[in-house]
Length: 57
Picture 1 (cartoon, rainbow, N blue to C red):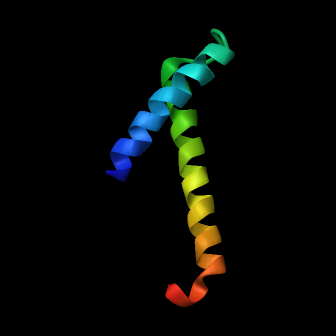
Picture 2 (picture 1 turned 135 degrees about the vertical axis):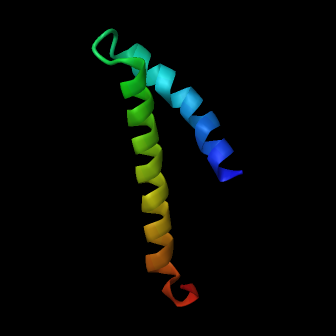
Picture 3 (picture 1 turned 30 degrees about the vertical axis):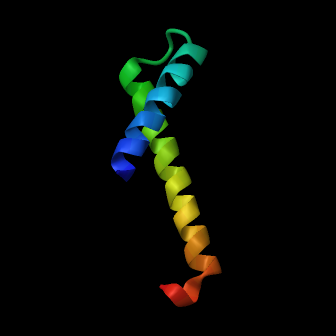
């Protein structure tokens, strides 16, 4: 379910990123940057949770 959410959310991010840069990025680069951004956000949230609620882990 999370993977589906990430892919749908990336469908919204990648075209916006592609459109904002004009022709300087390829579509694959836009998707890659979108996934990298989502991965970074997810990792940040996870690490913040681990630091705040360390006794659960």
